[in-house]
Length: 148
Image 1 (tube, rainbow, N blue to C red):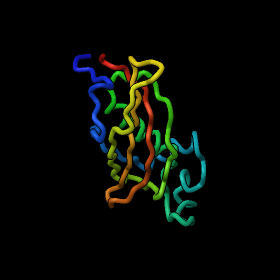
Image 2: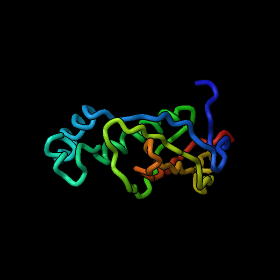
Image 3: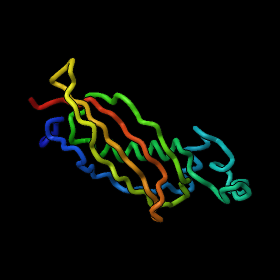
């Protein structure tokens, strides 16, 4: 691929272009039936009687969908491997068809002491719905190839 980016090219605070996304009620139910079959994820009638008043997305589904958008934004980088994931915070629920936007930025850049041809950097990100409410916040730490 042309224009590959290396650890040396990353600047602290640089934003990654993550695409917004939404989860339909059918996507939420299908995912949850397989991986997180709680009533407020899989049964619209029963979910309406819960404290949520309807179907909500599984936090696992939200995280997986955010990860997909982030990985798409990282395609130009020479990522070697993911090293760590920060504590995941989920302060608000995701409802069907919420428009979710990701603010992802590089931070904590450092060259590996044991392998100086590799760098380490974190992508911190937060995800908000169309009402401006944060629905997820976390970060991923990566090992990235150095140009030099």
